[in-house]
Length: 133
Ligand code: ATP
Image 1 (cartoon, helix red, strand yellow):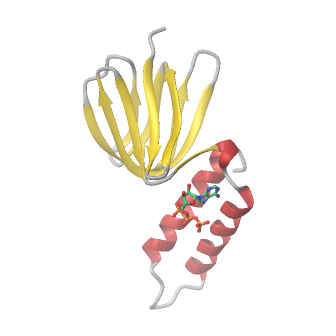
Image 2 (cartoon, helix red, strand yellow):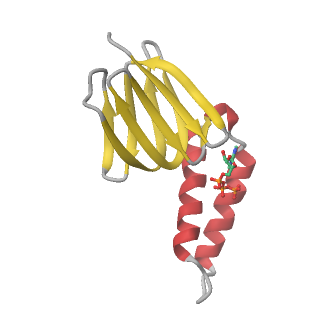
Image 3 (tube, helix red, strand yellow):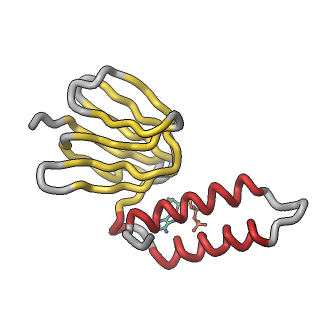
């Protein structure tokens, strides 16, 4: 099986680097699957999970938006934040989820609903990557 180099980088530094058979991710326009030989492109990403399929396993990285860049020899995910499952603090993500849910439940004229919804999505995505939901 052919492979392509992938790196996931954030403003704090690199989070993931490997040769993989396929990269699947959630672009703002929908799910994207990138195989070796894909045409070059750039796509804005949604909050979601990057799935990195290798021969015997699949690695998961939670990302909170950014860009996917496909070049002939390499895929780069430039994310605002990115964590592998083992780097996710589950208690922190659960607390963030509860906070966001409470804000949405008790919302009033001052509540920034969009902000709370995005915080909820980030927390749920992190919990998904750790296998908690
Ligand atoms: P919180 O409300 O807990 O800060 P958040 O969704 O607002 O969560 P972000 O702004 O997306 O957090 O991320 C800020 C920084 O904290 C990033 O570097 C991100 O990787 C890290 N981070 C956020 N939540 C977690 C978590 N549960 N485990 C590990 N790192 C996290």
